[in-house]
Length: 162
Ligand SMILES: [Zn+2]
Image (cartoon, rainbow, N blue to C red):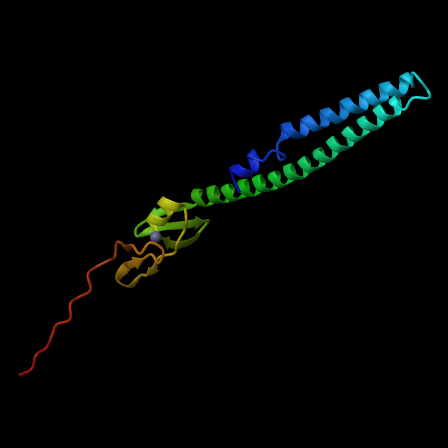
């Protein structure tokens, strides 16, 4: 996906337009030649000119066909890109930050928490792991997050018996 498909010469609208123009010009000249008829019925000049122009028109139509296939591919790629961006946008509209991270909210369904760093930096919803003592960790970026209910675990008292 990306710029390479857009720069691609055949996947270019102006390339397709040029080929269509070439084919159309050649066909117009063929029609003119046919209407005029041969100057000299014994010369092959007239029929050779028509054959040459038919060849040029055919070549341009083949190029046009290739260009249209490439444009079709490009259109598909762009559609996929738009769908992916729309999905990202839809998620973004339903994402809320509530410590320790992001949550997706869909009606009364809430899912999360997801890593704040990964979402802010990469736009990815990475589920936080753990949650014991409201202490969370991201497997992706290895950051630790603390929720509002976090409290240091009580240190074990060591009973020493003499
Ligand atoms: Zn992360």
